[in-house]
Image (cartoon, rainbow, N blue to C red; front, side, top):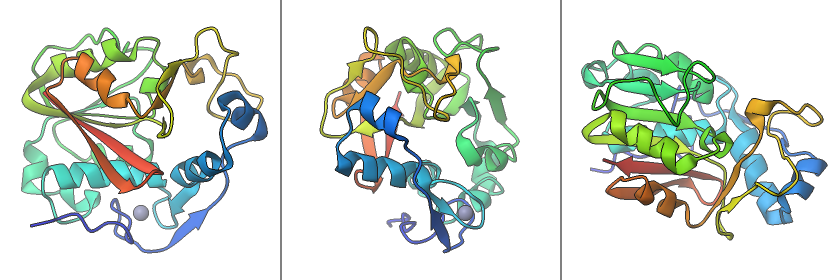
Amino acid sequence: MLAYNFRSVCSICGEREFSFREILWPELVAAWQLSPLEVNYINRQQGFCCAACGNSLRCMALAAAILCTYNFSGTLAQFVESDFGKTLKVLEINEAGGLSPALKKLPNHQLVQYPEYDMTNLSLKSETFDLVIHSDTLEHVPNPERALSECGRVLRSNGKCIFTVPVIVDRMTRSRSGLSPSYHGQPGVPAEDQLVCTEFGADIWQTVLKAGFCSCEIFSHEYPAALVMIARK
Ligand SMILES: [Zn+2]
């Protein structure tokens, strides 16, 4: 049975009203050398939001990927209250956008955040979690492969790491080292934890497999605006 039916409904709260605003600003578009098509889909990924719970398309995609992975035919709000959800041991690395309030209702949920926790050297026991979640964090980490291998280390066997990063689908991944510093967040407000280290492209699956995962599924909530990586240990 295909449980996935969230293309017209918010996968987090179940409402059907949405809003949209443009997120990217000219300096960021220039730094990333984005085409008009790429500007459109990134704006949609970050600026198309549920009018009820405020979650962006990126977060709705992440929730939909989690629900689909566990073949759960309800919203994330229902999932966290379900008997199955209660059994799941979940690690959230940095707050996964607006998913965080729902995830915190899981009884076996742990949130770790930068800078107390370094994603490339997690002070957490190996083979502890069933699911590791992060959202638009990996592009800010200097060594994303090492960060993913840490996610794999803390997962139990058959565990999954489900995450989003901004992906420019018509390009290969490139490091921004040697390029002018580029920041997410807000225009004109450079914050060191918002510095972008890697721009991910069509070969993102390589970073996942090099980190030691046995598979990398690319889940499409909406192509190319809302893609989610599902990495299996
Ligand atoms: Zn919603």
